[in-house]
Length: 216
Image (cartoon, rainbow, N blue to C red; front, side, top):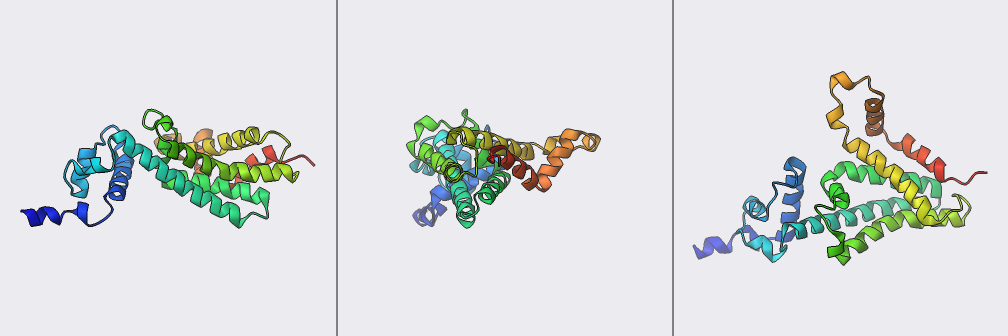
């Protein structure tokens, strides 16, 4: 019996990451309401108390998932910002594309960024910092564009707010399209817009860029 317990999955790898991955899968398939640490323990094959060595509550687990999401988003957007650092306008477009792409690939993490009923940012300085770093990729490029006379000469937070609201709106529309795509709805202009955004959000993001471009 002792030997069987010693060989359980808790001892052979990264339980914390396994719980995060299992929780992300559950959020995608079943939502947050039915998720519990005990159920996740059964799924990854450890004792019901083992998850509490890493997360004192479900809220703590959600904060960890959101933190991981912000780290991924920062990695993806900063990578494209660096790739297009000599073309500030293109950099904005590619950051927008990376943002929408992230939301589509990781909707469960994206939800946690904005659902205050699931994640309280005030309970984690690390989460606030990670979110700020992810958003800072956008504001850094915008500030460079303002300084270079490429973007409108307005406070960077105003410009970033307008652009973020637009890109976030596009991502949210893409994520919400599924319930609307019934055959009876195909002629709806709103559904057609959702189709277009889902197939290729780039033209829409390029239009967002026009809103912050400094007039000649």
